[in-house]
Image (cartoon, rainbow, N blue to C red; front, side, top):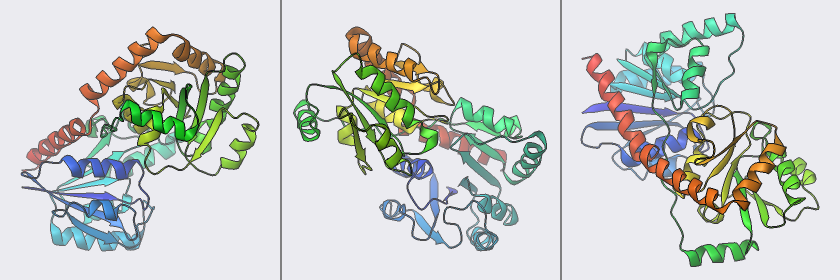
Length: 365
C-alpha cells in the first residue's frame, strides 16, 4: 500500500481542487492509502469528507499561500509522524520544504497554470530552488512542459499527465427545451463563455466579436457565465445589446452547458482549460484563442476553431462558420466528443497519475 498525501492550499474550489476531487473519486483503493491536507475553512472540506477512507488534515497558515514559515513547521511535524511515501503538492512551497525536512522519499508538484518566466537570473535562481525541493513536476499540458523548462526545471524532472474531468451529464431534449425557455433564448444559437470576469480571460474581445456578428446575423445569443472584478465594466461595454446575457456566478453549470451550442475561450493564457474539456464531453465545439494548452485540445476546423488573442474580427468570423455551416458544426461536435472520451476523462487522468506514482515509488525502493 502506497501512502500518498495530496496538499492543496486553495480555500475555494479552483483547478487544483477539482483535480483533487477527480482523483479521490477514481483512485485505486486497493493499492493507495490517501491523505489530504487543506487549509482551515476550505470549501473543499465538505466534498473531500464524502470519502470516509481518506484522512483529512486542516492546517493553519496555508490558506491561499504558497509559503509560510509557520506552515512549514506544522507540515514538517505531520510528515515526520505519518511517513508518507509520496507528497503531491499543488503549488505549495511550504509542503515541498516540509517534505524535504521530514525526509519524504518522493515529492511531486503539479503545475496547473502558465507562470511568468522572468529574466535569466530570476529564472535561474528559481530553477535551482525548485529543482532542489521537488523530485518531479507534473505538467498538465504540452504548454506547461515548455513553461517548466523555461522556468529552469530540469527536463528529467518533468512528467506530463494531462488534465481530465468528469463528463457533464447530458440533459434530455425536453429538459434542454425547458432550460432555454427559462432563459428566454428559444430558437437561438448559443455561444457561451464560462470564466471568471478578469482581464486575463479576455471577455471584452468576446463582447466585441459578438457585436460584430450581430451586425450581420440575428440568430444567436451570447452568454457570459461567471463573476469577477470586471463585471460592471463588461456590462457597460455590452449595454443596449440584449443578445449578450450576463448569467453571473453559477455553481452548477450543467444546464447552461447543455444548451450551449459553441463554447468560447477568449483568454490570454491557458494551461489546459477544464471548460474546454467539459464542453467536449457534451460534444460542444470550442472557439479558442491560440495560446497555451488550447492548441493541444482544439484541432483547427476539426473539433473547433483557433483564433489569435485580441482578434475579435477573427472570432466573429468563427462564430459565423459555426452558426451558418451546419455540416461543419456537426463534424466538429462529433470530433470533440470522440476526442474527450479517448484522451481526457477523469479516469484516464487518474490512471496515468497512478502509473507515475508506481514508477517513482519503484525508483526509491
